[in-house]
Image (cartoon, rainbow, N blue to C red):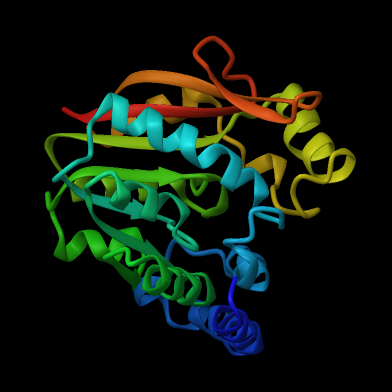
Length: 264
């Protein structure tokens, strides 16, 4: 990062108290925060300035981002498509999809991550529309507006994932594609995603995830059906602690997994 970028990053950090206060205040104004957990927003606000640091707290996201983008683009080519990235954070996946020729909108409820995403887009030249809004509110004014919707590593961080899924179904066009990723809920997932990743290997900050919020594939596929969506493919994302590499694994969805769905 150059000196100007570092200066902007520091300014983002200086604004963190403001944005944290705003995140808590949003609970008192439910118009666009019905499905928002202020504690979860605050958690990512604190780390926002380091979102694009490939050696920082978001290193796992940097490592899996090419795998996720490749999987999405192979299953549903994004070039010249209208794409919405829900829970975009600092814009890692958002920019990757733009680089592949998509017209991308990124939405999130964290102001600091969005500031970082906008700054990085200015530096990279990415043309992305970033907005601070919930999926539910955005769906009210953007019905069937997108060819493809992504919602990765987010469902386990909201109070009501079913509400998010219904919003996704509203946002995507009939016959459109949707991609969701989250973490399975079982002893292996607890051992790997929390004990291993947060405490032993320290791939993630402690407290990044709460086991009770993990979602079993059977639950997610049922919620998809309830929202008028159909799961058409599911793969796992596995990590080898020896080689320190991630890979797509079609047969192992015990911990991290991605689902490709379509609007029926």
